[in-house]
Image 1 (cartoon, rainbow, N blue to C red):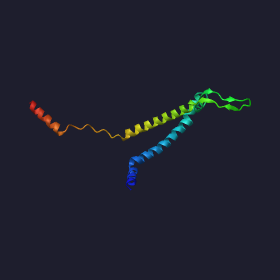
Image 2: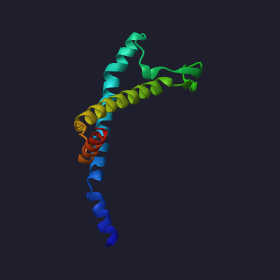
Image 3: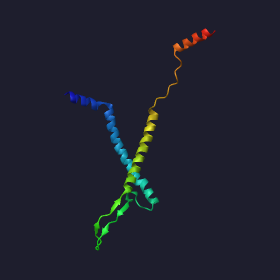
Image 4: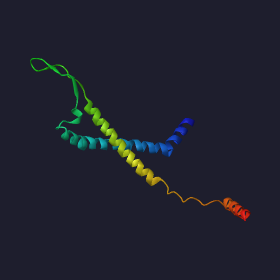
Amino acid sequence: MGMISEFKEFIARGNVVDLAVGVVIGAAFGKIVTALVDGIVMPIVGATTGGVSVSDWKYVVNPAQLDAAGKEVAAEVAVKYGMFLQTAIDFVLIALVIFLFLKAYNRMRKPAEAAPAGPSEEVLLLRDIRDALKK
């Protein structure tokens, strides 16, 4: 029973629960940003590049080969860098928003800096003694 009670104590800690909540919220937030990129950002980028979807961008190494009837004999060999570019933009936007959120959170969470404390009583007493000796 020792291991079960240790596991219950581990799960009951606030950090584990906070981490689980953070992972779930992070996954949902990732979906929101992906929808933003797929639905708004990339169509604007595609419109500026002639209407081609960014995810369709590719470099064709060997084009598809067709037979006389028009059926594909050999598939096209292409480097599809558009999907990578779209995923990289997703990542950068998610990282930027998380950075801005954490920066605002840390600013709100940071306690107000207290005014510097005056010198201690010992220091004041030593100053008085020093001043008295100077006279």
